[in-house]
Image 1 (tube, rainbow, N blue to C red):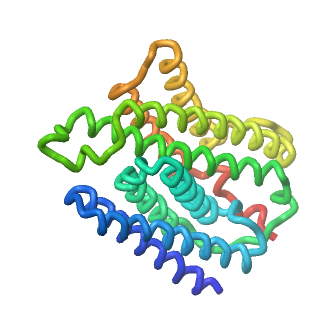
Image 2: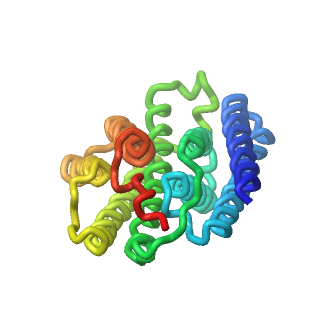
Length: 278
């Protein structure tokens, strides 16, 4: 079963890479058929990613929220779902797949760096608060990814002449992209708030304290503060446009560090799972 899971994972990575390339080529060279093929492959990638998680769930006996490998895999799943829903609702946003798919490709690439060994679900992990904590972490990451892709649109619109480079004209208008990016960040901030609160409640059940200054906890709080500052600047000082877009890019780098890099380089309670395995 584990080999089948690995086959599905690498198939999904290949499809994601091809989709990214087709999006970029179709966009730059104004080849609608190529772009549509890249769009169609997102759905195939999503199906393969879903199948990978389902196979893992079947033989591990629990959802994708215990090991770093499972958490990152499900981050990719929810980010892809977010993009598909939003780009289907607003047809003009399909083109931001040019940015979203490469980011998703890099994200699923990070999955392969994590240990793939499955663990059994112990009583410590049979908590609704843990499930809610991980779920809202995924929702926050999905919102952040879409907001970042929209901010890239704002930056490109500002610095590249769309008369000389006609492919820029296919991107959403800068003002619209800026507003939608703002709305996605508001959503991500709410999701991240619930993530931190539910994580604290679960931590208190498990360790008898709501906050332990674990590196992941600290960097999650730092990320929350950075996006909260964006919201404050936006509401108070009308912070928008290109400056806001560059800020969102910076915040995304911090969020990637918090969600994807920190677990690999620092020993934290979030990646020290072996002590809880039966």
